[in-house]
Amino acid sequence: MKTKITKVVALFTTLAIIFSCTEDMEYRDTAVSPVNQLYEPISGKSVELVASATASLFFEWEAAKAEDSGSPLYEIVFDKEGGNFSNPLYKVLSDNNGARNYATISHKTLNKIGAAAGLNSGETGTIIWTVIASRGLSTAMSNVSHKLTITRMLGFAEVPSQLFLTGEATEGGSDISQAVPCSSPEQETFEIFTRLKGGKSYKLVDKTNDNANYFYIDGNRIVEGEGETTVEKDGIYRITMDFSIASVSIQEVKSVGVFFCPSNKVIFELSYKGNGIFEGEGKVTFKQESWGKDQRYKLLMSYSDKDMYWGTLNDVDSSPNGAGQEDSYYFIKEYGINEGSEPQWNHKWKFDNQFDGSMTKVTVKFNGANYTHFVSLGDGVSPEEPETTPKNLFLTGEASEGGNDISKAVQYNKLGEGIFEIFTRLQGGKTYKMASSQEADAKFFYIEDGEIKSGDGITTVEKDGIYRIKVDFSNKSVITKEIKSMGLWHCWDRNVLLELPYIGNGVFEGTGTISPSNNDNRYKLLMVYADDSELIWGTKNDTDVVPGANPDPSYFYIMETNDNAEAGQWERKWKFNDGIIGNNTKVRVIFTGENYTHSIEPVN
Image (cartoon, rainbow, N blue to C red; front, side):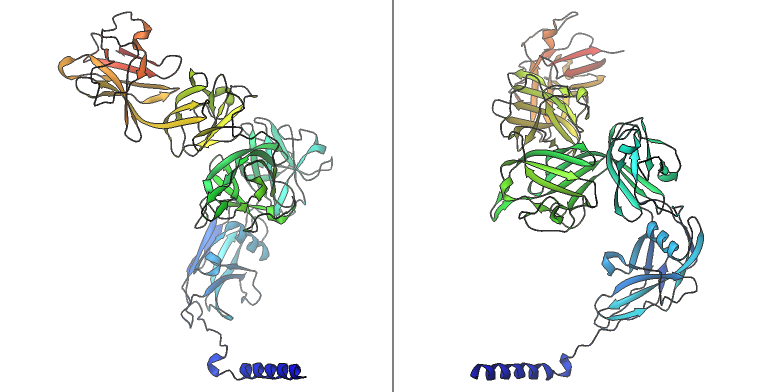
C-alpha cells in the first residue's frame, strides 16, 4: 500500500512540474521573412533542354531572414503559367540539402517538370517558379515569381518495361533468346555492365523473342528502329540509357579493384567474369594501429577518363556480422573520387575478422535490382611467397610503355638468376604488374611495401616519370628509383656537355654540339635521380684509348661506378674520336640486353 501511495505522489509531482512551466518555457516557432528578389534565371528566359548528364540550369535568389538569426532552408516550387503555387507541379530543395540560396537543377529534372506541365516531347512551353523559405515550422512563400520557357527533350512517350542487348558484339551473340538483360537503377532508365567486341554490332530489344521492339544507339541518343551500333575496340563497357530524355552514356571500364582504405590504394584487381560480374582474390592483411586493426575497404573503378569509388549504399560502420550474400549490408553505390571531406575513408565497409592474413575472394555484381558485392575466403595460394622464380620477366599494364596488351609487355634485363632490372617510363596513378612471359598463360607478380608478391595484384607510382626498377627474387626485394636526367659528362670540365632525354624502350638519346674546354676528349655518363643523388656510368673494360674507326663493340659497354660526379674524375672514362669535338653529335645510351652500352657518332 505504501508503494502505491508513493507512485501516485510521484506522478502528481511530475504533472505539477510540467503544467507549472513559465511563459519563458513555452514553445514559440521562429518567424522567417519571404524572399523578396529572384535573380537567376531572369524572368522570361528560354532554355532548350539537352540530353546530357551534366546539363543544368542555375537558380539564385535573395537570402531570407530568420527571427533567431539562424539560416533558413529553401525550396524552389514550379507551377503552370497562370498558377498560384497552391498545388505546385514540382518542388526542389536548394543546394546543400536546402541550406543555400541557390540551386543547380539538371535539365533532366526540368524535363520532368515540363512533362508535369503537360508539354509533350520536343514541345516548348512556359512554367513559373518561386521560392519558399522556412525555419522550423514557419514557412514564407516569396511574393514574386519568374517565368521560364523550356523546350522539352525528345524522349519516348512509351518506355519499355525491360531492355536487353543482342547482336554479334554481345555476350549472348546474335541469338535473341540469349539477349543480355539490363538493370533498371531508376524509373525510365536502364543500365548494363557488359563485354562488347570491337567492330561488331549490337542493338537493343524489349523482349527476347520475335515480337520484340528494336532500338539502337546513335551517338548519345536512343533511336527506335532496327539500326545497329558498334564500339571501336574490345572492352568492358558501362552503358546507361535514359528513355525519358532519349540519352545514352557509354563508358569503358578499364579496371575494378579492392581499395584498402588504410593503404590508400588498390590491393588486388577483379577480373570481369561475364553478366556484369567482376571477381578476384588476393591476400588481405589488416593494418595494425595503436587502437587496433584497421580493416576498412571499398571498391575503385577506373574508366577510360576518370576513377570512381563504389562504396556502401547504406553507410554502415560495422563488420558484416554474418550478413548473407543478399543482405543490404553489401549493396553498393558510386561516389566521386574526391567526394566529401575524407574521400579515403567515406562510404566504406569492414572486412570480417576471418579475412585478416587470408586469401580473400571479392565478387561484385552489377546486375539485378540492387548492385552488390560479397566477400568470401579465397581458393588460391597465398601471395606471400612467389610460387617460382621466373626465367624471364616482363612489365605490363596501363602504366607501362606496352600498355595492357601482354603481347607488347616490356622485357626486363636479366642480371643473374632471379635478378632483373628495367629502365622504363611509367604513368603516374596507373597500374602495372610483372609477368613471366608475353603469353596469355603468364604468371603474374606485383610489388607491395617494397616486396615481390605473386598473384594478380597491381602496383602504381605516384607520378609520370622514368624509373629504374631492380627486382631480386632471392630475397623478394624491389628497388625503384625515379631518374631525373641523363647526360654526357666531361671529365675535364666536370659538367654535363649534352643532355640525353629518354626516348623509350630503355634508351636515352640526345643530339648537339660537344664543345669541351681545353679540347679534352675524356668523358663519362652522368645519371641524376629524383632525390638529386648522382651516379657515374663508366667503361666496363677500363680502356684508355680512342675507339678508332672500327672499334670492338665492347669498347662502348657501360657499368655503374662507385664514383660520383665529384670524385673519380679520370677513372673508367672513354675518349672521343677525332671529329667529335665542335661538331654536331648524336649520343645514345642503351639499357637493354646482356650488356648496357652506348654509341657516339657525328651527324650531318
